[in-house]
Amino acid sequence: MNALCLPDHLAPLLMHIEPLLAAADKYQLGEAVSMDWSGSEVVDIHLEGTTFKVAFNPSESEAQGLEVRDQWIAPYPTLAEMQQQVAANPALVVCGLPTEQGCVDIWHHLGEARAVYCHHAGASEPQRAMLLAALALDYPLEDAVTLSRAHARGYLESHADGYGETGWPMTRALFPRPLTANHPECDELGWASKEVAVSPFATVERDKLALYPVVDTAQWVTRLLDLGVKTTQLRIKDPSEPTLPAQITTIVEAGKQHGAQVFVNDYWQLAIDNQAYGVHLGQEDLETADLAAIQQAGLRLGLSTHGYYEILRAAEFAPSYIALGHIFPTTTKDMPSKPQGLNRLALYQKLIGDAFPTVAIGGIDLSRAERVWRTGVSSVAVVRAVTQADDPAKAIAAFEDILVRNPAE
Ligand SMILES: Cc1ncc(COP(=O)(O)OP(=O)(O)O)c(N)n1
Ligand SMILES: Cc1nc(C(=O)O)sc1CCOP(=O)(O)O
Ligand SMILES: [Mg+2]
Image 1 (tube, rainbow, N blue to C red):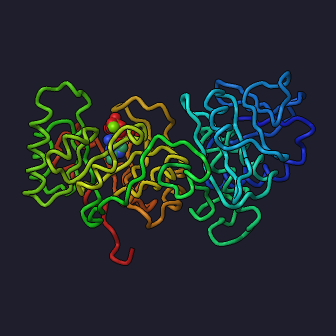
Image 2: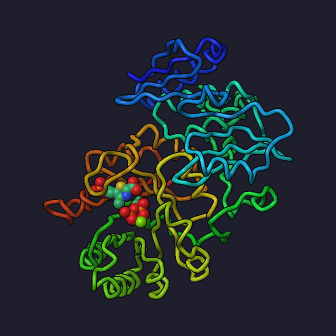
Image 3: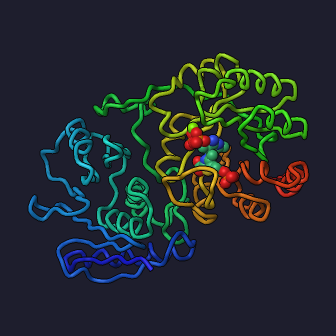
């Protein structure tokens, strides 16, 4: 069991934290969290195998663990100053930095600062409460901050549409927007972004999205297309593979002949050169790939995500679909994040709604496909469930029997 231990002076947060933990329990969003007192001036959070501290507005001598700066008193530092401070200090989390028209939350990510922006400052205690509850539920910091801003706003609009009967924020309208180059106020606010602004990507045909096998040779792609698969991806992780360009040429041609949606993983330049149907990229590619060139060449773009912040960040680029991973443990790839599970997946699907098609990936096999499909995702991506099946044709047919959409949906 995880534990969230408050210092005495934060006792007023209890009345906000308890309903959030009850909501998380109802939706089964993580391990149960017990509440206790820390006996010190800071919050202690105990997760399986780790303990960390969170302090709100500590003095320099009190600072330990995460240092959350909130409850600002004018004059405020500029956003550009705070971006630099957070980039230099992995422990610093800035909540609710006031701007002319709203507020910004900022945290450290791999040597850089990341931020979400919202026109509604919301209520401070509910924000602190959600930040702590989400950290105790083992959400990563970026998701805890993102959820905390959504809750700070949703709390004031209590029981408004989309807030969820339990008080757990559900719909995109409540959530803040990540500050990326695509945010219309990014420059005005003074936020330095590494990405470039880009127009929406071409759309996919939703009726061809259902089963989405991801495979590592052109031979597999052509085999799948011959079996009637309508969406697939070539994922070759070795960039020095000498046959890579030829394999990409082969799959693009085969995809066209079969009227299928064939994606190229990672190699966006080769995908453009070959006029591929689409490219699949990860979060780290967003700052380095030439998204404008991919978009202008008319290629579709699929983006990987692994939680609330990444979903909202991906949505800013208006991709052709958003992948949600990894749902269950997988041996196909070393994952830095934890498996999301079906219950978190269901909430991510609700958050995205109809705005973008969604693809669930990670550890999905025939025994799990139906429960994944019932969350409302548009597609189910699999590696081993097809490539390691005794009879791949039979496995594909079995998936297709499960992944059927009711015409009314
Ligand atoms: C459909 C789909 N979803 C997710 C991924 C993972 O992409 P990425 O995060 O870029 O990781 P690699 O696949 O490159 O290791 C995917 N390929 N396809
Ligand atoms: C390639 C990949 N990306 C993931 C993500 O979560 O981003 S999970 C994954 C591997 C999925 O393989 P399998 O179906 O064999 O578990
Ligand atoms: Mg990739």
